Length: 231
Image (cartoon, rainbow, N blue to C red; front, side, top):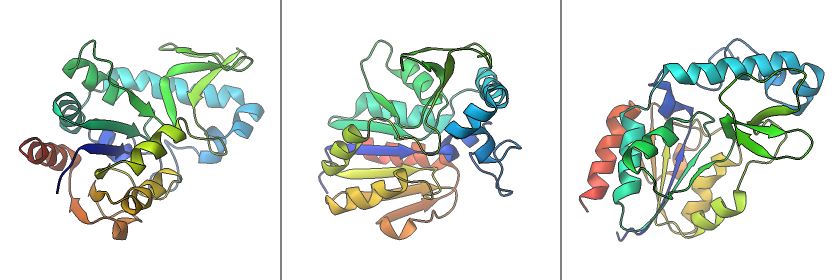
């Protein structure tokens, strides 16, 4: 199969091996909180102190972790791939960014954080987005630059355009239960792309994938990338 255009989607599973908690645990909670308490516009309006404290803690945690072998393998693929390559992540951490910066310093490669970024803040009045590595106060004008439930994910037009042109769609570390990302595989498959799932365990959308490999991301992602680069 001739592969020129690649779209990669990553979820919480790829960062879990770096020590970051996945979005929702087996108990339905995210780091001890109900999702409705910390990840909706309504929660922010009702209790900005709790929401800001939650994301401040998540932002501080980023300083204690580093990109793992899966992040670095994708950064190598981005640097060496001969065709078009788009990396879309549901993750709000900066581990992909750091891996890419180490592999491709000064390169203009564009990574899409469809659910926003912990290391950025957005002005409540103007919508302006800035870098943010410090704690945000509860009574300030800045909210986390995070796409909460009920809000539209970022850059969907660019993502859909890339999916329609993809020859290979690769899904890594995502459960397949959060839309619209869960629908990307069907969109890519309808466009004729070869679809591959690399996950710790089968996702809810496993039947849409032509190829499936299950196990640790730090093992399967570098191996799959090595196969692609040897083509």
